Length: 150
Image 1 (cartoon, rainbow, N blue to C red):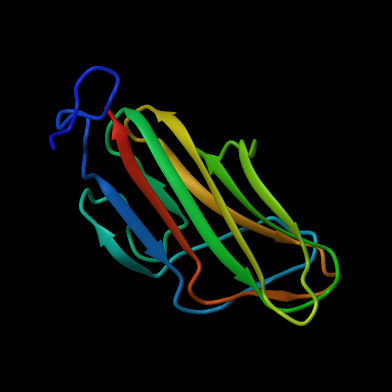
Image 2 (image 1 turned 60 degrees about the vertical axis):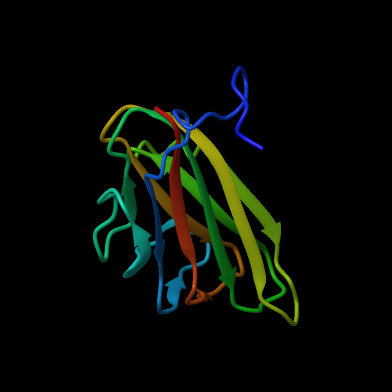
């Protein structure tokens, strides 16, 4: 069975440009502060979109990009946990996911979306928590992006 044409995916529309950056250590977060999440490892990067210890993914070509991020916050039953995606350090945070804290277990959050990019746009991941004290974003947080159509 081949890929259909028309409004379906075709080989021309399929692209392999993608990246997944990951944190290998915890990140201490101050309550109430929006904190950039820096990454120190990559699982793959076939388009040179990430450099170690960076907090952004640089999109090399114009087009429609998908993205997804995951983070786990240490157990604490107070407040909210958030992951926020920003484009070009605008501070607007067009994509946010928020969860109430989980008592007795880590709070897991994923955030996903898409962005119509101009070549050179940068996606940045930020975290936020309102526990009333310092709280860790746990090791293993990741941020991935892939080209859907150029």
